[in-house]
Amino acid sequence: MMSNEWRQVNHISSFDGEKVNVRKQALPPMPKELFELFDVHELEKYMTPEEVSKGGSN
Image (cartoon, one colour):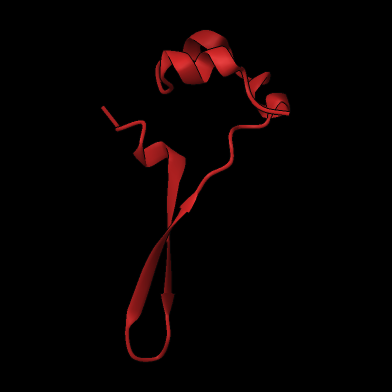
C-alpha cells in the first residue's frame, strides 16, 4: 500500500550541468471538480478516510 505521505509530495529533479538536484514540493489538494468525477468508493481504495471526507478543495 502506498503511503499517504508520498501522495502529497512531488519530488522535482533538475540538472545544473554538474549534478542532479532533487527538492520536495507539496501537492495542492484535489480540486472539487475533479474529485466529483470519481465514484467515492473507488477513491476510498487510494485515499485516506480524512482525504475522502474533505471531498476536494475549492
